[in-house]
Image 1 (cartoon, rainbow, N blue to C red):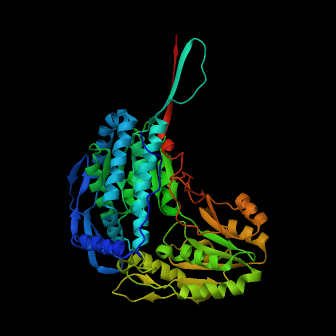
Image 2 (tube, rainbow, N blue to C red):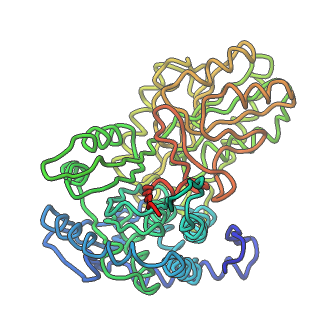
Image 3 (spheres, helix red, strand yellow):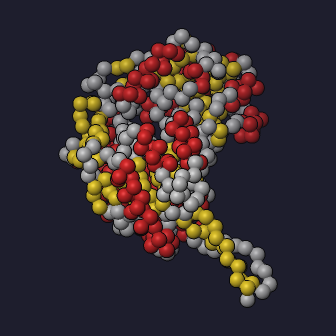
Length: 515
């Protein structure tokens, strides 16, 4: 029997003891920098001649570590191992699968600050962002273990005279997990452990920007006692590898988080039945957002300012849930901008290791792309604050940036920049704000600050997003509390951390026996 699910608590780093513990964890990880990690296929370490090099975004001359890079031969071997492990793992009682998943949660909990320190150095997450990511990974394991137990019960059906009728859920098979760099442990663990807790086996392809965090996760997997082949570790680079994975005839399902462009390509590849493929693949895609917060003239402006700044610039805006559009009604537009500029200028930028609120963006490529979007935006709108790169040890730093007088249909108003850039749009009134809010191909998160009950109720009804937040920030969905997933081009609304998630990776079988 498991106790009711509870979210993992977070540290208060204003406590000198907790701050000292985090610095100690950073020092411990620093002693392991530069290590090499192999692939894990069928429980065995496999090295290749190719390497993925992970760099510290705050100091790119510093190598965090290297991992082996897989090719087609290793992909084929990984799926062979996953299918070899599948029958026994699928037949394993749900209670035993849940127990191993809970052991993984416990192992992650024991390593919480160390795992967070890896993220600080590899993903440039400050202490709170990094620990919250690890806590979410723990939550996913705990929550999905309990879901797997619930789903192991027979499906309720109506009786029929003279027959024994049964229906139950069973796992699908072997699937591929393609995880992003911005939540290198939470999303990776959640995407993998939902299917695994249900009895599936997986091939795990982490982002090439954060492979060491994923490799350390695999250390915890081994300690927890998962059978060989249940979780296979397969770092790889290049679009060709993604195409090969998505189109592989032995892939039963694909679980992906990343850009819209890559997600749509995966969806297209997954829909094509390959020679020797005996099933229709399931593809679950989470593909980002162009998320907006509406602030109207009735709002508590001080509360709204703090939430907008955190939602826009937390982790440098590198969250699919981040506020990248701010829609303000005309009556308070000028006053709100004045407060927003002051709050943005007050943000300190520096190394994640030193726990600055705004740190380096993930890579040289992202740094270049974000700056190019800022430069192009100057021709579309008025740059109020920020907009420049900062030179700190060669790190990939960009000032928190705010544009005003942005047109809703402009590139600044439509394109997901995925960086510390906030576009402010003026709405004549609340009716126009609703239209502007929905005028994007995405529909992931959004928010409203208002004291008007009528407007709040209208937002709940009319705002086209999967996760709507009222009078609070729009990031930081909690497992089991705010199931996460969007509408429109934001993805397939799989609702990670929700009561239906594990069910996605199972299929129902019905047996009727005449007496």
